[in-house]
Image (cartoon, rainbow, N blue to C red; front, top):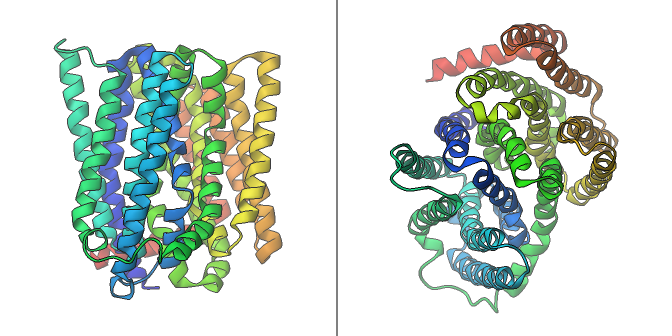
Length: 477
């Protein structure tokens, strides 16, 4: 694997995602102000349910990524891919129409009907977009992936700015429908860009779908375990969110969801790297990845708990400029390390299990954890009926999931797990305790100091190597 090419692609994706980060940051603060508590609650219910939309591609796009990752465009049959494109569009269109019809007849209130219809339309658009994005990853065109990320950010900024202006000058009362329409339009515009960028796999002579049926079935079969495992990840990540949205009021959920949306900015930052991991890991080979497993995981862990420092400026903004959401601040210090743990699992463990062809094991372990999570949440809900306790429970439950995946990996490839496990557990609970014992000014200095000391104790050799690599990278540029 060419490290310089990898680093350049990684930097390109990070820079593109920095813009996404800024827009996400802006949206996290502006949207609740514009919509108000209840409308924002409905908006967050929509964003919660669209995380499950990838279930509807049923593993087809994952199958393509696994089968074709690392290929050159010249090695791929465009006639075959044109058949895949046509089939997948028809498949997703039928599912979307079925969901719309179900949304119209189910006995729920009008706001929920509108949300379910929007999710149905969004599912078609997003899954088609994912199809093209995964094709781009397969042939390692990360510059195009970065370009679409920037395009999506520009469009999002435009509709956010328009919403804020209309709210500020009382031109139009923006509600959740405005956001749902523009989220769908944003994905549609980016999808159209992809259709014309990759017109070679859309237009022209194609093989018949009937002739390709066995290939198509094989793609579903190959990708289903990956897709299902990824959705189990989403269910576990959102378990506390889902539970609170179901058993508490829309207003209560709005308060908690606001803190979650701020912490999820971490996922945006780390998504820049995870999007390019699998093709490069596949090119590097299984032996290389196993040999460097402990070092790679250590790097991810220390980076995650460095990024978590972003909690402090975010907390400052909430406390000083968003008075109506100050109650959300008490959840932030819990949600941040929780999202950090899920970033580690989603970015590294997940890709390693794919590489080792152990997705069924990943899925089984995760499903057991999911069932255990819901059981524990329900027991504590019956005992306390308190959102803060539900939020606090998420940390030991996520660490249990982390440990169970690591234990299986240790059995599988005999890797060391204790060092990273202790570091992640220690830093997670230290972060929570510090920020509940001290105000955010003192807490920031204490956390940064302890982060430096503990990180150097655990990873001093790795930190020195990273610094050396960073200096070399500056010379390259």
